Length: 340
Ligand SMILES: [Zn+2]
Image 1 (spheres, rainbow, N blue to C red):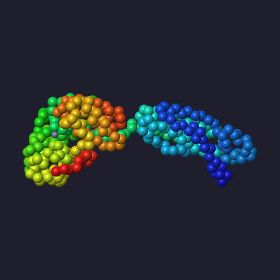
Image 2 (tube, rainbow, N blue to C red):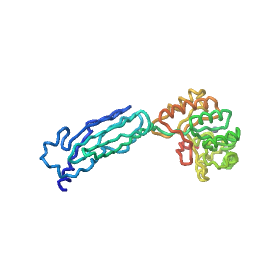
Image 3 (cartoon, rainbow, N blue to C red):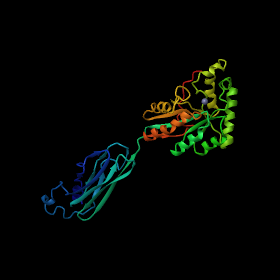
């Protein structure tokens, strides 16, 4: 028994010779015979009878590297092989499988060892190829619903992309209901969009916010606690109307105290300013996307040219590894610095 144990410590290390590191379609099909001492050396060199009394145990297989690997699409797959351990007899080894590193999916490589007594052992390695992940895009649309919102909803539906609508007192109730029913986030912007009124004092602000809040509640049956300040939290236009009370600083903390979460943006499409075409909106958005970030994009669904840019933005995002999500109260809020 001692002899057998010691003998089984001799490891036949194989397949390191395959050393495949490739992107694209990797097909592995290696069949080889090895003998218990050295590759291609028959056991005749051994002292006669050395193996005679040894129990013939099945081969053991230990994978080099992880048994389950996850790779981002386009990266190289490295086949590290396995260690095969067997006792005194001849072993046939087969490693087979294919991986296409350019196509997301789940692939399997099998490692099989059969000894001369037909003891058979199989191990497998699973390689999951996932799409490249570059970030999250939160598309947000202010000032609607408007004449182009249904068209926008059709585009979002086509790609199963969820977005966020910061709605006002304008537009159709049916459109807000559709936003809600199709799984988008319905947030609150303002009932009146009248800066002179809402930023005059806190009471006016909350009266306006509660008006749009009850509109949404009546349509969807749910309270919304996601808000966007007209002009964003960094606006200075409020200083014209607030009598020097620095109302934005007060509102930013008061809305949170009342359970709301406010969202600014870190990508402006420019559709409320310098951008006047779908092309410009598209370029303004995609040129600001970087790797590994979260992006809250500001657009207005009351502008046709801005809605017209959305399908191209979605196509760009999806084909470049971005995930589109709707905002939630725990999502990235893209807060601006407050200036008033
Ligand atoms: Zn607005």
